[in-house]
Every structure is written in structure tokens, then in C-alpha cells.
Length: 626
Image (cartoon, rainbow, N blue to C red; front, side):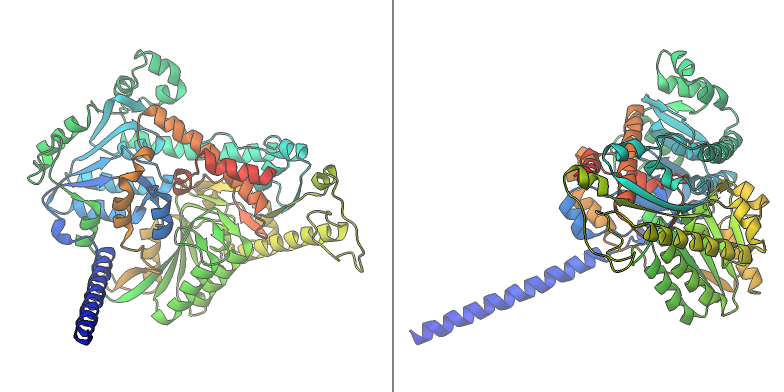
């Protein structure tokens, strides 16, 4: 028996040892898969295929693997604008690439400045004799802005195109809050600061309407000018001026209508499109599926074309998304996170700092934290340059004030110099249900703020004074930065939003130009010669397990597949409206302190694409009413 016991213990020990070995090998393999990066060896002769099945953004958001896997929903794919531009520019000069192909079947859009940058890169590729071909089932405004730069635009015969232009409706909850007896206490400075209007009015104020009409009118003019320049044969006046008559002339066949109006060049399905690409780029020797063609995908192409990093470093810090307190991001501008990035970069001996802003603003406190971080670099007497992307408004302009020079595009949305706060109180709601508040105060501020019993006049006055002081601070920062008087800044401030062209005329912007122009100016000011410097983006890269997670849940997410025909485009816009409801309610319920936020700024494409379905926004509404 003793011998048998020893043999048993030996076998158990071997089993435990093997279990540990296999467990170790499993985690090593898992680590290898999660940290795997695209291989340049996957680059081959043929087309560069840009399958834009998501949104174009300034900065990618990280994936939370656990949350994504538990939700079972495929996360929205994000493409950094600068990555797409670099990929296209590299392809233009590479003999292995015979054509550039954009598959926009599931494209969800992007900001106007980003799309114009990509379009200009496509123009450079065409000038280098590289054909550019696009395919989609349905083209909307954003997809058409890219397709206009293509040499061949294809659409599915069952698809079409819809050009809507900027604008639309905002939702106003003033009457709802009154019916619910909720007191939305509004503290603001600025005649044009319309971010609070949804909680106090039943419709747009005359001042807000004036601002919206001027802003969206300018953006629409820029969109039309860019598209018509790229595609002169397009009868845009008919498409946008008489859309019903235009479609009716083709008996409701939207694809034929798009062809006759010059929106597209060819009608054909995915297979016919692929066969056309194969005529140019060659057949796919790895895949004999109908419609396949030789190609290289975006990720391995970027891995193959990593830029060199010679000489001095010009740092670029990205402020993208709503500015919030804390460590949020990338993709959201967490004030503490960006401040810490700037502090860490103080030891990097930067030759210059470029601040890339693509934000509608947000928390005043977080904006100030970021501004102070930028000022630490300015104290080292290096050039500080701001490059504005789609928007740099309100808090996005606050963080821009330390700049030596500000670059923007005509389509950039900026300004919105104003501050507000909204705090809901429920004294009337509670009283209606028989709940009242009573007690003893030793001072007018005892027990304040009291969201059930209501605010005293003193706390109301203090909160409004705080907002007014914050606005004066905003004016002072802008005045000192732009060499203007506070009175002049107040005249162009008051919460008013400006397009980039007007902002340049009134002194809020120095010159037109994109990120490359801002970097080149910074290098010149730092007295760096061409080839003696490189650009480094501050912060962490998005984790490499992104693509693995998408593959793991792709099968589960088929029910939520994106893309579709023109009706799918309409449905996505309806879903965006539901997301707007959720966002408005969230801004009311979650009091975040003083806000420098631009309501007029279009919601970022990533936010629109990630809008919750009916269950998500309805849950927020029920929580609000309850």
C-alpha cells in the first residue's frame, strides 16, 4: 500500500506539473496573439484596399476587451485620419500599388476637415497616375465627399445617393421639464451660448438661429465648393435643390438618378466592381472567389511604411473629443491624462510642441489643467503651435490660448467663447408627491445646494457669480493670447460659434493649414533643417488586440451589421436622433461643474456611430422621469 501511495503521489505531481506547463504555454500563446502586429510581409503587388467599415477620427479610442466581449456587439471601427492620408501618399509613390480602392459599403462618416484631407491625398495619388476607385451601396454626404475625388465611382444598382447638407433639428425639453415640475437652474454668460437652451425653451432663440444659419451656411458652401471642384460634371444644384423631382425623373430608381446627375460613374454589384479592379491591379492568386483582386490591406501597408525618426523631436499632443475631468481617453480628452502626458514630455527635450485640437469643449477645470500643461512647455521657450481639425470650440479654444500661432481650415468650427452650468432641482416635483423640506439654517448657505428643497437666493447668486468670473477668465486668456482687448473678445465671444474663415478674419485664427503645415511652421521657428527632425505623437498607441477582439465577436455581431441601402442611411440618422436624446438627458442629470461646451458643433462621427439603440436611450429617459 505504501508503494502504491508513492506511485499515486508521483502521478498526481506529474499531472499538476503538466497542467502548469500547458497553462503557461496557453498564456504565452495568448500574449503572442494579443501583441501581434501586422506584418509588412503581407504587402504584395496589386491595389491598396481601404475598407472603410467605420468612422474617420482624429484619435482612436481604446477597446476594453472584457466589456466588448461581454456585450457581444462589434465595436465601431475607427480610422485615424492621418493614417489614411499617410497610407494614400505612400501608395502614390510605390510601384507595387497599381490602384487605390475605397470600399465604403459600411462607411459611417467623419469630420469635414478630415474628409477634405483624405480627398486631397486621393488627388495627389491620381496626379501620380494611380487610379482611385470607390464602391458603396448608398452614398451619403461624407462618403460622397471622398468619392468625388475618385477616378471611378461605383454604386450598387439597388442603392443610390442622398445629399442632405448640414443642419437638422435639436430637441428642446423646456415644456417636458415644466410638465414634470423639474427646475433646470441655468447659469450662463453669453447671448449665443445655446448649449443651455434645450433645458429652458421650446425652440431655438433668435440669436441661436442667427448663429446656426451663418455657421451651417458657411460649412455647406465649403462642402459644395470642394465636391464640385473635384467632380465638375456633378449637377449638384439639381440633386440638392429639387431632390424629389430628381428621383421621380428616374421613376424612383435612385442608382440611375445618381448616374444621370453625375454623382457616380458606374452601376454594378460587388463582383462586377471587383472584376474591374482586377483588370487594373491584377487577379488575386490567393483567392479565386468571384470579384476578388490582388490587394494589400491598410494595417500591413502602414506597418510596411513606418516613417523614419531622424534628429530632433517635435511633439504632438492630441486633444480629441469632449474635454472631461479625469483620465478618460484616448478618443476622449481626459484633462488629467493629457496633463500627465505633457508633464512626462518635459523630460523629452522637445524642439517644439504642436497641439492638435478636435474638440467641442467640455469641463472648464479640465481645459485649464491642459492649458497649464501646455504653458509648462512654453516656459521652456520652445515654439507652441495649435492645429485645429474639425472643431476647436469653447473649451477647445480655451486650451488653444497658449499658442504662438493657430492654424485652422475654412471648415473648422471654433470660437464659442462662453461658459455655462445646468443643475436640476426637484422641489416642485417632490412637493407634488407630498415631499417637502424643512430645517434650521445657521447661515444662508447651510444645507446648500439642496436639490430637493431648492436653492436659496444666496447660493443662486454665488453660482452665477462663479460663472461670470469664469467667463472673465476666458476673455482674459483669449485677449492676452490674441493681442486683443477684453472688450473686443467679448464682442466676438458671448458664446458665438465661427467657421474657420470668419475666425481668421476676426483674429481668432492666424492662418489656414492642416497638421503638416503647423508642424512645418514649428520646425521653422525652432530653426530645424529639413531631415533633422521627426514628429512624435504623445501618449499610448491603441492596444494591438483590437483586431483579434473584432474577429472573436464578428460572427455574433452579424445581426447588427452596418451598411445597407438608402433606407439604412435614413435609419442610422434616426438612431443618431435617439443618441442625441440620451446625450441631452445625460448632460442635465450628470452635473459636471462649469462647462465650456459647443452645442452648435456637429456630434463627432464616432459618437454618432456609437449611439445607443432604443433600449439605451429609453433606459436613460425612464431613469430621468423616475
